Length: 240
Image 1 (cartoon, helix red, strand yellow):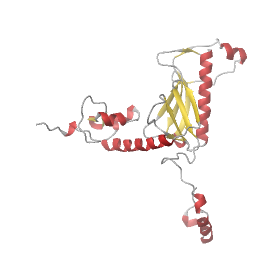
Image 2 (cartoon, rainbow, N blue to C red):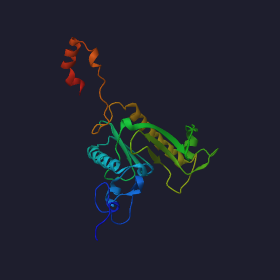
Image 3 (cartoon, one colour):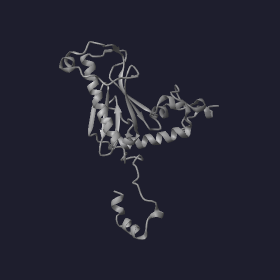
């Protein structure tokens, strides 16, 4: 005795599974605690992953760590419990709720596919101008109580499909038209401004990663010999 079955072994790292099972993947296969702790993807995606998928994901996470180490923020804005960081020269960005987070998911500009402002899960209209008194004291007319106000960021990423920047703490509520509400709206407008800048500069995004776009090159069969010679002379500049 003393031997353990294949089901007792983590299919990713090969170690014996000990203690409580944290994560199960496709076919109800369990992962060890160590591999489970290294996964960072949308929870809904995990049950459909195979062991090979998880191995690819953990390799992706190692590359993400390299991006994080090199990341040098040139912009940051705090919105609720979340901070949005942007590295403009590298065209990378990420959101974090913990400044001590060791390996937050880093995204290329090219992965930001859209964003939407939501109140209680529904798209909200642009804030109306209420004048100086309304800005200072809040517009009481038509105010209501909400429990969520956030920007939802849509991503073209294999492991993270959305990121929410929420301004209202869990189990809390806020009156629309109040001073705090208006302050939150201004903060989210700043976030939207930064995200819009990211969307406007998506081409060539993803320094330190595989997301960088290749330069457009003419088809080889359409280049004349003289043009080809000229292209060779300038190829070092084209690749910069």
